[in-house]
Image (cartoon, rainbow, N blue to C red; front, side):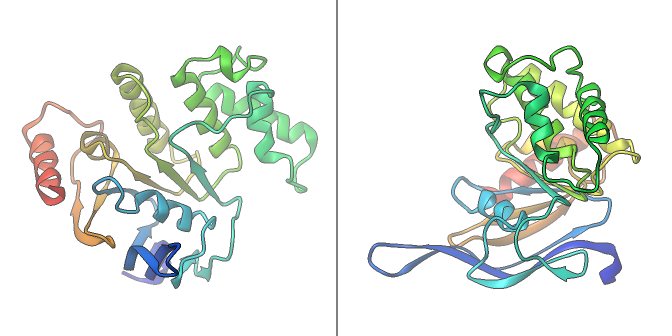
Length: 255
């Protein structure tokens, strides 16, 4: 694969945390992951294997102990509005309205007028089907609606790369399925950001529903056990034989 086809690359990335004893507990070691242009990449693995740590490194929030992160051909040093991270629990500010929470991501943009910022927020509210809830506060919303606000805030900066950290894990099954379908619909629309998506999840079915390719992690410190292409037509049928074959294959690799 040529470098022009790679949006982000983790090269020999190792990370861990310092213990009171003075030693370092490694979470991931010599990890090499490529995120291709136009790809929905899934990352799965057992609890505690460093999936969320990998996303924070990709977002520029955490600097690895060793190795390097390349984004659009350059070394990533810190955060950038071209990469958005959506957390497992919506990190909404309770004293701000829905509109204000989304607008927050645009406050520092000097290249946009105030009118352009407000228009962008309105477009995202419509996209995630929250028009009419602009003045509501987070405590007035359901869990699914709060996740929609978080998704709108992640997309409002027009990121090239969207990182999703267990985005559906705190939702009921029906709400989760609804949001999965909506995210898939947005992914089909090439006029919308982002260029690529990386999602980590412990839910294998969710990953098979959405991903083009799945990286399977295992061990401590975590290493890549396998990479599995998901070559299913979209929208995907959860009841198909091939869907369940892939789910079983991924479960077998993790367990």
